[in-house]
Length: 115
Image (tube, rainbow, N blue to C red; front, side):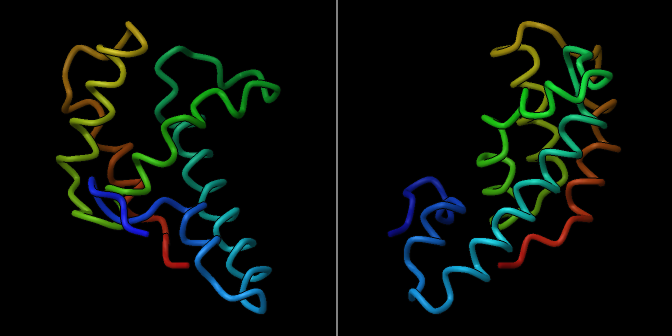
């Protein structure tokens, strides 16, 4: 099942695998989600909550869109635009310039997102 907006999300991919592959693919999907979560929480953190480990899941709703970019266009600029727009349009905070998000985009692009 493909998403019209890009590659399938992690949960869709896991559901489409055979039962024998589920455990390792689910484990790998969880690793990918966690690696994206860590970058968003520690490096992006537009609302400044990364000093509280209890809030590590604060940006989980942005993992899937980031994953789609990482498995789709793999564009640094697409990631920067997504993060910048999310900060300004959804969260209501944000950096002065989208260029400030380039290090975060590069860190995300350095992640291995292969299932």
